[in-house]
Length: 107
Length: 120
Image (tube, rainbow over all chains, first blue to last red; front, side, top):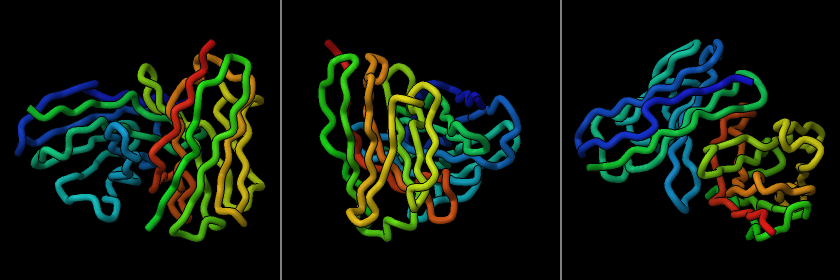
């Protein structure tokens, strides 16, 4: 199985900050990488697909980059509603696998 | 509006069985692949299973293979997850999710989840 490693596991940042979350795959997954946002009690939300494509309706402050084994999710100007846990997901091979999550807290 | 609504979940004893359902609305259900994904506090998100749009192709994560069965009823816009021989480690919130049209493993809409607790 392809292992997905996210860093950091948690972070705290202020409104307006630029935030970066990393995701590393244990093998080349080309660009088969998605990012999701999870908030307690709510349905998870797709943010980015194919590493760098913004899902419809997601604010443009979110962006994604990377290929092969190293990927990044960036929030350009953090907003209070961005407090959540973020997961990367690879779909190069079955089984689909997720990173362990990055919990983002607003200071 | 796309909606996915899971059944309530519940408390089950180890070795027991439970069937989850996920009712879909707001889209042409029979043209989309569907998935189940679970979340545990300790292990984050784990993909459980998928089924293709017409129900002829399925896949499972190894730890549930032989114990869980995914199925769908396109006439009723519903996908199911039959869980048997449940273990304590199956305790999780179970989400159903729709795969983006034409992209079988991009999960573009999710339900709010059903809590399954396996405990004696």
